Image (cartoon, rainbow, N blue to C red):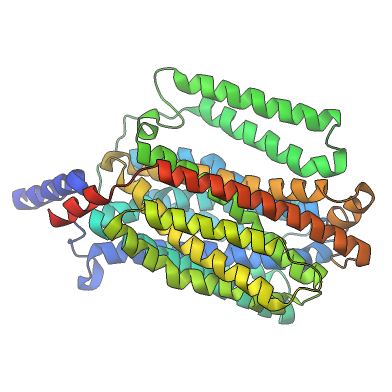
Length: 506
């Protein structure tokens, strides 16, 4: 018994000195780090397949449920909003009671939410059940990167993040193809039902294979007021951006929501300056790498996450392609990202995160500029070039940035650090849809806005088609500017290459 306790203390000491040893053995004689990566990878695959299928299926779901595009946007935003709201809560609870327990519960909740989504009878029910999915997604996302960071030594984390990124890319490959086949031969409900067997398998595998490594911090408290102020402000912003299309941008409800966003976020900032428990740990943000790395991730998500939606809607509504054809046309993005993702992780392990992450963001800005020139008569090679640049850029940015931020966090704060990064990244994602919708609508004549965004059909006439293309162009230009600002953040974050090499040598 004393020998076992001594071994545990030695492992904890090694993690505190620079990362998990990753040498203890899991099931079947396999190093536990690979067991942990397999479970988190399955979760990433499920989330990636779900998100890519849902985006592809929105036009079909919209017509089947006799809904409109704004409601369908909330099918996407509702999930991301809930996962954003609860990320910090579940990250803190995971540090207090065990992140493995929280991660496994997330699998179960996500699976139940998927089943409920398939049973939805109208757009409002679908949005509501996507909120349930979002709660499960928050449990998964708040703890996945923390489990990987805890299981892998510092000099191998970039590679581990790269492998995890491959899974996201593969999920984004499988998702559109599976979604296209489902929509061609089955009903849209199967878009959500495919999550059920994966979720059941993940729940069982996580329960059997994972175990806690770090010591729980049961004495901690959670800042409920901070969560309410932060989340309430984001909710007001999203409603204003999405509903402003139908209400009018200068209408009292829209202006009131924008004002409420500013007031609530100002109150949140003031509450975080005080002493005691904080929603966002200020000690983490005093780290240059964490602060600027998180800012870069937020801006990158804000600029990039709606691009897939714009391209899918362009292919189906403007080019007139079927869901399956649209899925096949956007596959190069995921294929390229799956190849470049691990390369980006390996590069960051050797030279640091700043160079590959910055290069990736610049490439994504160039891709947005290229895609902004698409028209109803553009050849596929034009779209292909933009998708390839997006894939290369995403692969070079995501793994190095995540590895750098998580590697800079203290081992006892991994749950909070993972949740903080995911919270800001998710905030960028959910705002991305609303912002792209608002920018696109602002560029379209008011007489055509209703036909495009508030109608129940995805078939666009000539003038409406041209107007949507102009709106998409404006949204992509804004995305290019934002992602260039993200590249400035990665430069300001500095580089931890020397620290990483020293840790590897040690």
